[in-house]
Image (cartoon, rainbow, N blue to C red; front, top):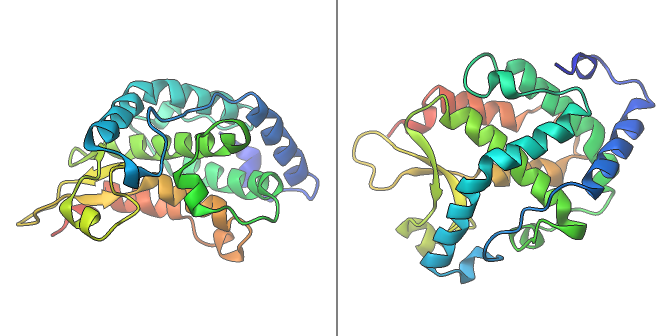
Length: 223
């Protein structure tokens, strides 16, 4: 699994990896929502429509992601349901560090543009970010019965005008007397890496691995 990514990259390799990713994105399948964002303007029915489409397309989106990652020597089918995810997450971490800076450029991505993205055309990278979020989320929900895909329709998120409101997230059934499930915005975690990929701390901290480890260990389910 992407053994060359587990070694130090040669100076010429990041540019080549970025060029490959740019070419792949040119033909990557878009993933528009049934109703475009921002989520704050959706009705409950529209949010439900978006969630229904998301659930129907998960396998298709994972297949598109696997096709792209295979070009970089990364495979994930063998560990989707069980097995050690460590090597896969390490490979994804090194892949993002190698490929994303050259594709992203120096312009810092805009969070509001991402929340309202069509995930197509010039915004096709947002489709890839969503697919990576699906992969991370599936690695979690297939290992932890108390975590599931859902829509954040909690009163607290609505009242506090949270960016997760009415969006597809992971919902964590918490213990004891918690009135509402814990919300894990996996897509936002992936977008955060895209936004900060030029930061030196990204080489030191793997948010994706930390999210998965904490979720599978049940740390989000504590009261």
